[in-house]
Length: 622
Image 1 (tube, rainbow, N blue to C red):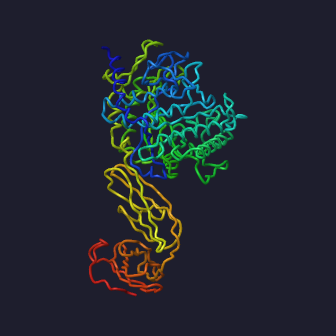
Image 2: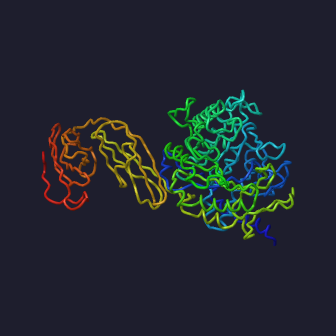
Image 3: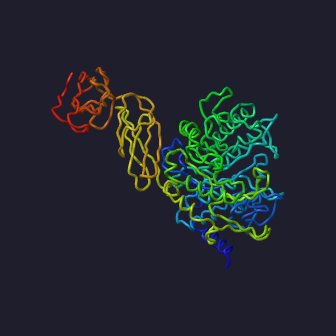
């Protein structure tokens, strides 16, 4: 049996490994849910054009559709090639061929478990033809709309990343979301319909915790390379075209968020950029005067990144962009495309490809840039003009990948294999790299943060009970006032508020690898029960005031001021690093007020451990 047939048997024989995830979506936590506190990165691939490989340089293809070669696609069922639009939705959905099963299985056959970590899958759609699409399609054949492909990805346990191209929606030489496409639909209607359909899918394929599945919408990928956005090919000046682009993105963002739940998120990503200044004139959060608006109008930020011989090679080279748009603006960052481009020179492509896999899929490099939460490998073979305007074949696939198109056959499906091992579709370099625990896979579905709260109206106290789910939770932290600084580090808490008001409470949990957070907002009403007061201060100030060694009720200053406390018998403790703890017991009935004055704290004699007290502590020291 030839190695080509072995490859086909391998790819389609082990696809069954991934069927157990069908029907259950995958929820990536939003930023508000703690995504930026989560340790790790989501990964996946772009596997090809809209309707499968369809031209003279196909990897897996069954028909020839165009005179000039373009991108290929890995197929799950090449004998059933071709995605056809139909009035029968179930038949149309069945015809969609994402290539995900073959792709994952090829990785899994080399490294057990590595294939399941492939979650992000992208496909490109030209909005001028929506709901049809001209991107890599079969000639004269109407194609299914993007939400059909998205549903198939969700059924396969992946995260669909819809890349929407709006470049033909223009009026008077600039982009305009009110412009109409070839189906007489204006951009507003197109984005609204896509958002509503994605919202329905997101909720239909909720994860095992009932949270809507994540769908990412990348609007206008590589915007800075488009003539309609950047006619002068100058990133460093503003103009009417860029202003129109910023407005179009803001409009699209608002339409999506008005018609979809928060798990449907917008991605803003250009081509590779090193600095803030490289992209500031494309930033939706900038007004026409160059001022930062009150919000950014983006959820994720990102770029495509190919390590060209004369381009940036490390994350450090991109750090100024990352620091402003991702870290400082508190957004997750995604590489919408990454791979290698050696202008069709096989040796250069293989070297660049090997280096990029080893460098980028590496925990030690990524953990320096923790807001990088997504990487999509560009996994195709394509024909493209190189720098000398000569048509060359560019192989962007995984290290060592080769393909066989059977002499450009239009009847025999092609195959992909590794030059070093013809029984596999790639060598072991990529599967080994993505096996690192830093890359998040389906196991993270089982960890979910949650809690219940019981508010006492008599003494402005809230009792929070952890109800998180998932095995191996080892740490809890609670931020009870919204300052992003935890006050407690135990599973369940009781907190007394000094003042009534509205407070966000955030619980963050971890199993040592995964981190999950949830935030709920509560209104603490003014006390209606009988309360008492103590007045206390300290020298030096800044000591935490603890009630019964359980609830922190305030922090001292250098003069005695009143604090509302529950009536009855209770212990007050002052704690300050480097000083001995000071304790006193009060016994009050409403409306009594006990004055302790300004306590002079004593420095520790031999230890800086605040829990170790040496010497006698006076009951009160005014």
